[in-house]
Image 1 (tube, rainbow, N blue to C red):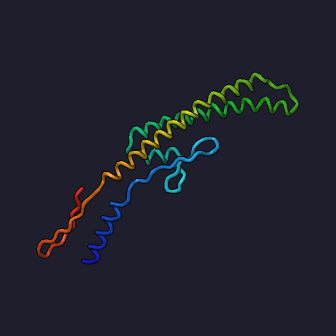
Image 2 (cartoon, rainbow, N blue to C red):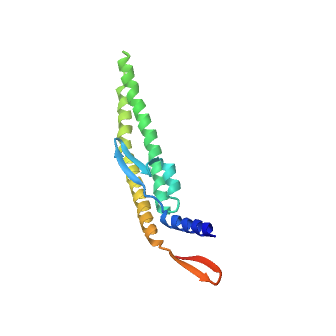
Length: 157
């Protein structure tokens, strides 16, 4: 009986102490890195972690779209810039107009990447604000009930 009460008490205390962890943002060269409990998060990880917060999930999904477009435009622009440079290095006659189009595509990715960073920051802020407010709202009270030969613990929240 003592073991059962000890296990029940440990489970209740542990479940009341455990709460969702905040996501940390770190600036690195070229963007942001998101971590939770020392683990680096991808956008799909963040989307599953934030599933309870619909606004944050919508922002993450929009940020994923920005990420895809910036990847496509940036890669295409890089290839269009690199091809004439490679031709010039190889001794051929480069088409600098193609390099100009590539540079324009690379420049076009800058506001898209800024939008990605803005949306992910906002989503993380929304999520972290929700984590701190919900963890403080859950304040259970425990009562020991003894009636004759019966013993019980009640939790009110």
